[in-house]
Length: 151
Image 1 (cartoon, rainbow, N blue to C red):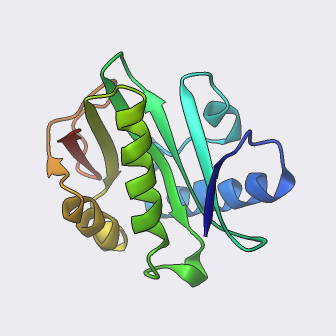
Image 2: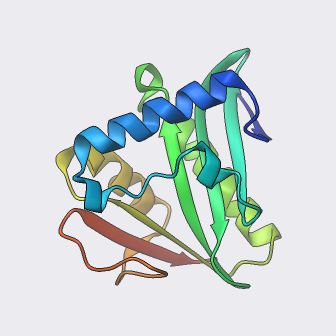
């Protein structure tokens, strides 16, 4: 597998992210959907990575700078046919390493509370994330779980 910074200019990643946003919309009510679309991911405070297995796009993830020491994990997605094969673990380790290299001391995330999101929540716990209060512009939401970890 190869993880590389992606400028989000290619049609393959655009389709992959559109599938992600559509899936999140199908699982969460509109007021609880926090997945970023392609334009939002192109903002300068966001670094985006794609994961490829050979020529096949199999995953992605992003890091959004919230302030000088705090970043948010965004857009973690694994190709559904490759779920639970280790891609997310490799990518999450990469993003944590990059967040440290960039000088962040805290990494936070929002994910869903539905059963669908249980594997993601378990993955984040495995990597040392703990439940926390809403951060940044988030508000309490029964459809959201907030997690954080020190780096």
